[in-house]
Image: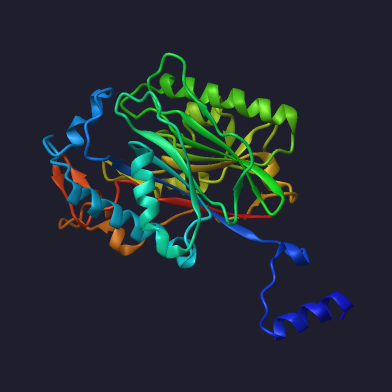
Length: 337
């Protein structure tokens, strides 16, 4: 046993805590993403036409009581993530504004985390945005975040945040692309904008560590994701800056997914990684760590057995479900550094 290891053993024997970075050991962080299904406040925003339904007088009768139920349900799931420690980084979409994210953070206080919010109002017709939470005790924001708007498309901004963990930097993009009611070329336009920014980052550093999380509203093999964004499901075939879509294996065979459409699982929510996240340097994706978060209480089992079990959502039409969470399942991965 070397002198350093003897010292480490002695410290541990005394029950003293030491940081991973102080002894050069590798560490891990937990990154999650969740489309939380219409997390609105109860106040009508006169600048937005699409939020009236989520007001007390609107068709969904969205009251303060229902908002608190929704926040409690969401926080219950988030507090269970990462073995009950909560996520280090969490992307969110379908949130109306910073206020509702801060209300959610209040519900997460039992975790003892120091969650900071990255958010900016975006030009979505429905008044919904993307946001990022990061625990400042573990993961620091190292520069002013960027919010990428789409030319001539009133959709959600893509959030870009440069983060640092234990001296290692990586960039996270939070996405919520136009819905499946929109034609695929609309999502291709968003993908082109995002890919242009990715190419800029790779030009500055071909080994840059980049993670894209989000609801892409397209399957992994859709042209917008696979061709325009330039991703693939085989980490051994990442040529010319192709990114690795770690959600591809879930997509194959539709055996599992994050969203149920016409009784068929679809992988709309994905974790996509730059080649630098697979090179064994800096921050890396941990193989096979991309998974859905699916507790039994988050699922609805139809009475008719011919219909598949599905995410337990907050609303069916205008009918509120107090035991609902979201129409999407969260997705997560682990990163090492």
